[in-house]
Image (cartoon, rainbow, N blue to C red; front, side):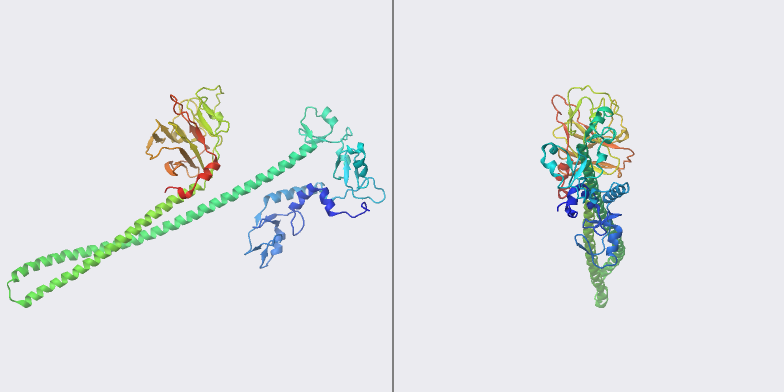
Length: 545
């Protein structure tokens, strides 16, 4: 009865799990076929573009046909490149005749009248058996040793045509299955492994490809978010600049009007002074006069003078008002300046914190590089190393393993209690033989410490840096397109020095010089901090602006 039962969907799924994973996951739930131009919607589900577009049509209620999530407005479609690639591979496999096992019905080779569905295939007997005819392989001791697998058709394709042996090995040199005798004869010196091992590794490679693409998608999304945040701050700063320009224009117009009024008032006051001096002389002459009517006419000028005094008071109040506005205006300029600096700090914070590793091939033979590539110090003994073209042979320097040709990058270096060091970036083409001069003209943008307290910027003319605190951790920020290299005190989050307007035309590499130890001093290493530590320690609220 079991042999004549109809094909069970569960039996088909269980007999071909790999086929189920390779196709069902890439089927559109609307047309129930492999994706055609797959697109994703905000809830994360994917569909054929024509299917989802036709389903939604002119409907006013837009929802996901799989999870029933309702969207307010029609969401944008996002191309699912990974699903598209896998769907094209499935279609290509179908066209080449390699159909999935899920769609096949493998019959029992022993049944004569009514063929039942095969449950297992024996790779020794090269026969497929239904549940009833499989019993001997499950009970007889000699048959239990036979290798059974999920039922497949054309078992003869799994046998070597030259030696009539099972193809149970895979030749990695020729990329094909071989038997044991093939390995001894034609593939003796080749790299052969069991087919099961090669199959597992291939599946692992596919999984790794999937994870790699997922990481790339996440990285792209992060970059998009950072760019959007930067654009918001840029728009905010432009709006502030426009408001400042309008405020400046209004204040300049008010100030000009005030100056014109003041000049007019000064001229009137000077004229009045002259008139008063003239009248004072007349009053002195009339002091003994008894012509009272004439005295009252002259006295009327006093009332006129008092009226002028009120005008003066009004003008004084006007200037107080102007001065108050100018104070507010000054505070606005201060706030704008802080916002500008804060925007720069925010822009810097949106850069990529990178893991920097030292390149041992560039390190001077007197220097030692730690196995993890993060520590560099004076080894006190010259190592016997090949004099490669990329190695510094005289200056105690080393470059990072990776250079940069685009983008913004930030890393931090612990200098600790060292009394001398150099840090910065260098062009890939810098001279590494003989004495090295640190300057932008020679391809170096760096700051240095000498004698335990002399900090200098290695510009065209070395500039002495006045720092309030001794540096323990130095942050280096590179903006390749912006042509800027900046240095920060990572402990206090304050700016030290910047090289600006630098037209980078080739790859630049992080540059390190721990300097040699002298009489037991300066032995400590330069330590490059991991990007995870740098990211977790940066708090924008603590940035000093």
